[in-house]
Length: 321
Image 1 (cartoon, one colour):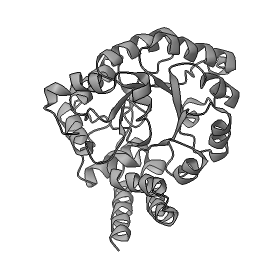
Image 2 (cartoon, one colour; image 1 turned 90 degrees about the vertical axis):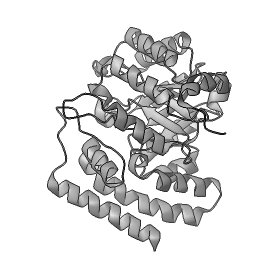
Image 3 (cartoon, one colour; image 1 turned 135 degrees about the vertical axis):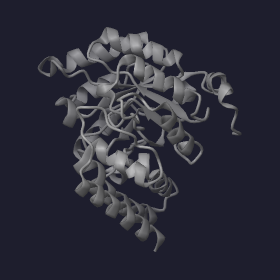
């Protein structure tokens, strides 16, 4: 599809994705959970954010995810998440999905922000499991929360599970029950626990779109039936992530394994040890604009920067060989 002027994207996206069925039909592949670049004053650097999205457009990504963990969502106000959505809608191609993280602790606030995100152009909503009162977030509470969202929201949603941050691992039977709620169309599962993901894939309804948030298990997840990956590595090495997925889809397992072997060191030397700070350093080194972190996150050390630079250079050299 040909690119349109920025001012036309919003209307065209609404024409292109008329129904939930049309949105879900494109919910597969690789998506980066894009960073939120901040300036030295701690404000969002909107020009840097736009510049990154312009580089991602049209290279084979299924879309982007705004206000996820790598986007420092816990440090963003609701209005900042909505502003990022609004900016992204004018930049993301209309044939690529715009997913916005709108999960808050209360059902009421999640509904409010989610509705406004849709009004600003979000195609899909990524809703983090509420976890502050995690000892009370049993199957009944989670099902009630997400069922209320499914009934209230005008766009489809993905459940977002990241227990290493929330301390909450949703029971498999809760995910299975929620997979049968209209408008809940998938799950981003970021624990990296392959056995847990396989169990989920066995129990959810057919057609439920499960995404791996862990690049380390991407190949195994795809073999188990995952729809794709929402990967921090796609922020700074999107072409490599896309190539792994495409080789798998093209039934070229040897190539897929070889490419995946080049992706794993980026997990081990960038985001796994250094988190969002590491991703932003890698982006700067790859020609993107990572920007500053928002306090209390701290920038990567000089040693970390050297480790990340080595990892990127070694990956480039191996791919070129």
